[in-house]
Image (cartoon, rainbow, N blue to C red):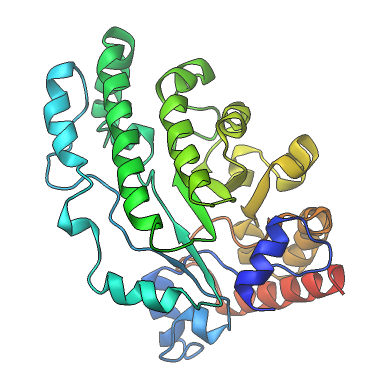
Length: 328
């Protein structure tokens, strides 16, 4: 089976199919460091290690052409709406029509990533001062945020309709950095009020186009928000540095069963620590989730320059061996 088929089987909780060999992103710094050490040739780390590719549609979903400032009142909506115009030609990458032709017969996964900034970024937060101003506005002038999210949902629906009428994608990713390692920035009640209605609309649009697997990428302690995401139609989670927030994927599988698909989650710190830590971690934390199904394991953070190549290669080999055992 090709990696695209293996992904579909894995996310359908097939017990007879090994997941694709995905990995977190590799930073430019780690690629340079590994090449300087003579352990990586001219190829990308993904190519060198024989990892399965997966591709994004490449659409620019983020704001274009308008200054980013906190959304504080209804007067700010004019600029906000200019930033999210689906017909903007800068949103479609060069050669997109040619790519559409090649994607029709692909054997690797293709995903779409709307909601590419997260709620806090959409309403203009870029630093601590803008966070304070925007959160105060949510309390004092909530109508502006509600109107902004209504426009944002309509914008994403229009752009998704235009793109997904030409290609079938394998899954979607929503980016939602919304929490510290201790708690979400917004209470579940506030998140349900300001975000969930727009999120439901975008999920419904994806469902209309046959996108069955819908992941949220996040970081921090998002546990209070997971039930809201599930109710909105999100059925997958990919957490960055999950263990720093006290979250294990084994706990998520226990709590949500087959309602929640899982990407990533392997603690990068165990790999930096070395082979013994890798072996303990994979056996204790990864094996039971793999055996339960619906899981594609890889590191829970970008692979950065502090990652020793030998440690990383050992981890990948041991993970491949574990997958082979589970799905023999």
